[in-house]
Amino acid sequence: MFDKKPIEKKEYSFQLKLAIDHGLSTMDYRLFFLLLPHMEIVNGKYTVAGVNLEEIAAQFGAPVYVYNGEKIVSQYERLINAFKPLNIKVKYACKALNNSSILKLLQKHGCGLDTVSINEVLLGLRAGFTANDIIFTPNCVSIEEIQEAVKLGVHINIDNISILEQFGSIYGNTVPCCIRVNPHILAGGNAKISTGHIDSKFGISVHQMRHVARVVKSSNIHVNGLHMHTGSDILDAGVFLQGAEILFEIAKEFPDLSFVDFGSGFKVAYKEGDITTDIEELGSAISQRFQEFCKEYGRELELWFEPGKFLVSESGYFLAKVNVLKQTTATVFVGVDSGLNHLIRPMLYDSYHHIVNLSNPEGKQRIYTVVGYICETDTFGWDRKINEVHEGDILCFKNAGAYGITMSSNYNARFRPAEVLIWKGKAQLIRSRETFEDLIKNEIDADIQ
Ligand SMILES: Cc1ncc(COP(=O)(O)O)c(C=O)c1O
Image (cartoon, rainbow, N blue to C red; front, side):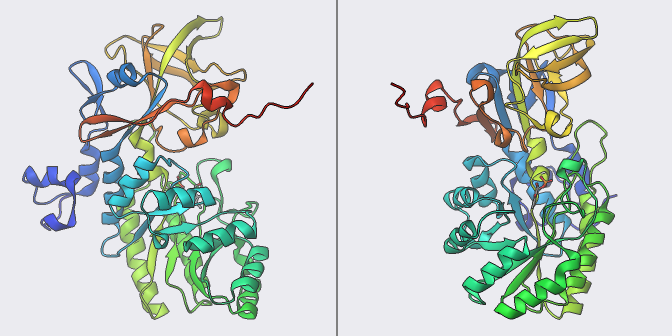
């Protein structure tokens, strides 16, 4: 399990320092990262990175999103290390969690950014990413939005032939672009997060590459990258390799590439014992094949990935207070002070969030259905075994770092929650809870006399 290679201090940052300082001269990354503390009970209280979660709810109020910054950085470093000896570029998919403190944290550690709207580009630039660190991968946006991104100097990824034609007419070969390919691979944990299949709106069909080549030639477009993203929550490393072969084949038609972007889709753990994408195995398989491909291509290219969930999902915890317990003929409902307005993923695409009662860690386990206060059905979890729940308890929803706050809304005129970052043993508020003023600040009174 352990290799003989000593850890070189210069290669790693603080989260590996712990291992080095404890005299581990050799290690298996899988083991190390499994051992990194997530959430644990210390002195009868649930803590994350040494901070008591219930105290965060008491200090900042609930509902509240809490992120473990060290977990985010360690996931980033794990990815980089899995792909050594390649120097991969990670472009964090900021749609997953776009709080500026999180963006700055990743930027500081060398990460780039994947963006899908001009405002995400602006958020990235504001957080300190250079234009060269950012790729703009929108779908179905206007040519005007793409022109704005060109002005800001970021990498442009084009996902349909209509925009490619317009882009070519405007810029010719003066601005390079990447082509998003739809490889027609059905992958991903749920139909709503599968993006690379034949019925998907994303990318340009692998069968339309002749058409793409004609447009590129006619307008003398400089294609500097190829991209694909087949979906989220992909378990099988074979899917990535299958997609890679498709891009390598297409690459032969584009001699001026600088990078190939394999998107994302790495599956993380949602519950104990969950199977996840084996990043280390994937890293070694792809690295080897990519090096061979670069030889065939005749040049070194950069390999890019754009993970969202892999970097931030497990770092996040959503805390909500129990308002009511409601016994029905079918179940016991736990009604919390939140709903699909704050965490829509279970209702949107059946995502699983493990639920823990922070207020009663030692209590007897009972079966509950946890729901929100929204006026549609908004169930967070059915038939969950949770330590006995009382009104006023604080529940914790795990894997809340990705697509939690960024998908939240003001539905039912509720405020969006606060966000807190745990960094170096300290909990810091990184977004305040909204107020009534926020709800109405853009409203303009109509003249209804
Ligand atoms: C183009 C693109 N890249 C990257 C991602 C991030 O995927 P994940 O969060 O599964 O890593 C997405 C997710 O929707 C995406 O659409």
